[in-house]
Every structure is written in C-alpha cells, then in structure tokens.
Image (cartoon, rainbow, N blue to C red):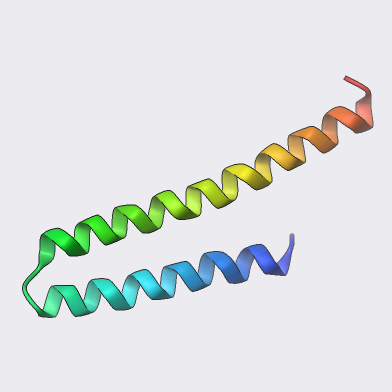
Length: 64
C-alpha cells in the first residue's frame, strides 16, 4: 500500500475532524454534518481512483 494514499486520507480526516469540532462548538451542527459528508465523498473519490488503477493493472497482467 502506498504511504501517500494513507497520508492523504489521514490529512483529509484530520481537517474534517477539526472543522466539525469548531462548527459543533459554534452551534452549527448542520454545516458540520455537510463537512463530514463532503470529507467522506472526497476520500471515496480518492480510493475509487486507486481501485480503478488496480483493476487496470490486473487487466494488463492477465491480458484481458
């Protein structure tokens, strides 16, 4: 597994956690929820790209 991918996911997670804490303390729970959902979507996009690269590599290896 690539360390760069782990660092990206961890970085997005930390940023989202801090922003959600700040928004929660300010009484803006709706915006905190939207930030959480946005963070999840960003991480899913990053992971889906990597899964696509992996599947392409498998196709090339087996000649499909």
